[in-house]
Length: 79
Image 1 (cartoon, one colour):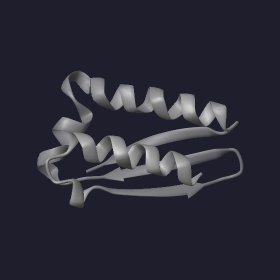
Image 2: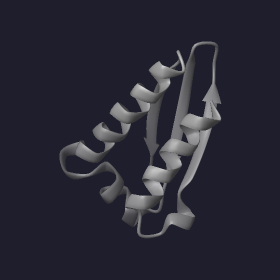
Image 3: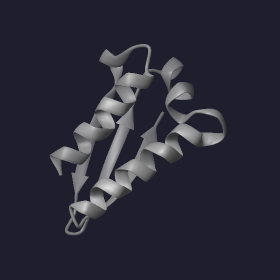
Image 4: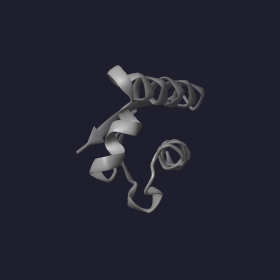
C-alpha cells in the first residue's frame, strides 16, 4: 500500500540528518506488505534509536495503519 510506504518515509526523513538519502521500498504480497527502509549509515542510529525504541515505535504506528487498511505490514531496516 502506497500509504504505508509514505508513512514510513515521512517518519524516517523527520528523524534523519540527511533526509535525501532515505530510501523506502515496498514489496507487496497477498496479505502482507514488506517495507524496506534504507538510510545513510550515520542516520541509522537515529532511526533505530536507543535500544531500538524509535524502530519499535515506527513499527507500532505502521501496524496500526496497516490494521486499519486490513493488511499486515513488516518493516525491515536495511544497513
